[in-house]
Image 1 (tube, helix red, strand yellow):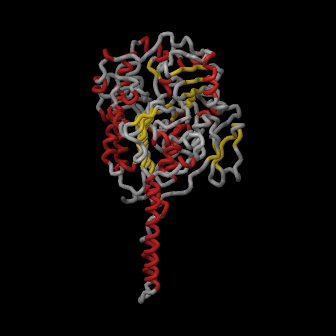
Image 2: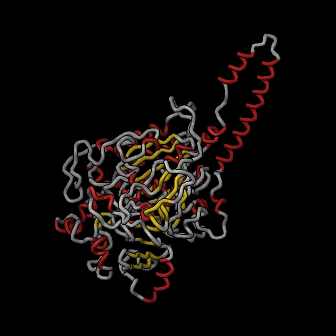
Image 3: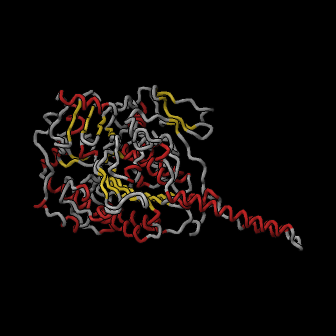
Length: 585
């Protein structure tokens, strides 16, 4: 390999750390050991086999260099012609790379694939037999696929902010879509930033962070955390398509496969994956489909004849046993559900979604083709995830933004050479907060204190391992769902509840929360609810956003200290920060 031109010396400074509690969520899953009681957490932070080998190789290289330098210096000092200046010049210009840079070069690459609005209608889950996702299923056959994985929030911005920062919505206060997540998360805390600080080349394209399609200089990301991240168009293809195409109205434009920005995102990611460079890469590939508009080339619709479309399991009276708060703030049956029903587009919209999923799958296949041909394949970790699921009329709701299973459950696939077993399935409950600490462990990096999720390396190694963790999803202030192996427990801001037994009710038709026979189940699961949350009450978009906290103006969840470390807000008083060792910058 050759070092990428202009990169200079790899920065291997110690990454920033945050003195932060985990906000009171799952006490078992917060442990970095993956939630196994009585196990030393450090055992699950151990370096990967390739990292250990890298250290040994680097030590050998350093020893060899020391011997050779000793010979050169000895020969130079006893030279007959006294050419000491020439000897010094040779030592300076031929010096081997630093020890830290060599360690970084032995670390695994990361191919980080996020797919927008992709629910669990994919092959490996068996949730919808109509779907056609041969390439996602191909990736599934290479590693471990999770069937009980959930978003930290069933909404784009708070979900993605939580994944990238390692900080849950109820801790950061980032609950809504149309606000800049940087108001809540300080520079330098991102997963990509942590990898960049440890010698990785960080690049990406498409929708990874929320609104990251604007590029690293577009105001929706910290430019310092990326080496390269070009801008792309957001949802409009060429030619332009209405945002609700395929949803509320038919798609009337014939499109080619390369009309959609996703095609060009994958082109970019293939090029970066195949670039020749000294550093390992952290490459984020953000697939925008199946986000609206559901407009793709006609051949993808032809895969799903309209007269063969099957509706998801649903009940007309499914809202009769849910709290009024959930009807008014989650289901909202008078909104998109009513529009779809009035226009008679239930099957047509599902057809458009399935076509968009198939198009996304095609692009993922192009990326996997390049990955499988890459000389770095055996040293590359692949992670595929979606920011949340999607409703198609279940509980009289469309889109996301609920705490029920269709909105929170997501595809989640890991391929880790030497760790995962091809074609294995894990049904243990996890959420996407596991990504940050697990990737750090696999790459041999320290896990920052602010990364509050569980390390799921034990499940990657053994999918059937004992696991006492749960998944926590949050939708707005004080609205949380807990999902364990069997039950989903929801508690809303007003104290109302829902409880579903997935062993006998996978469609969540029967709310058991008012049945006293299940009080012990609710009590057990309620332990995992956050004891407190950032107090951002529902608010309207506008200049008054800074007043959404009781303490008034609010910029970020952390502040930076003179020593370069970060401190969090006081968990007992979110209007105050914890003390810095020295004054704040």
